[in-house]
Image 1 (cartoon, helix red, strand yellow):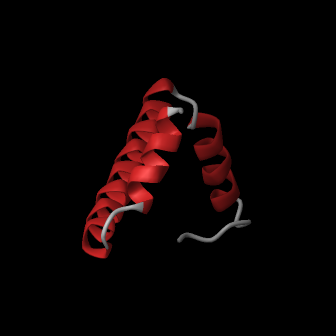
Image 2: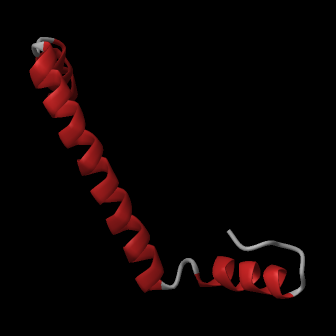
Length: 66
């Protein structure tokens, strides 16, 4: 049995209150992982071209600010 299968089985057997706690923790965990990925992409310059293109579009009047 794989770790994922073991986790699925364990999660499926949690009582409602513990499932809620786990769900809240997991959502925060995923958000933190996303933040770290975006930060790494920014630091590596991966998003520079996209940012420049967005700036150019905005300055040319083809896009609006958020």
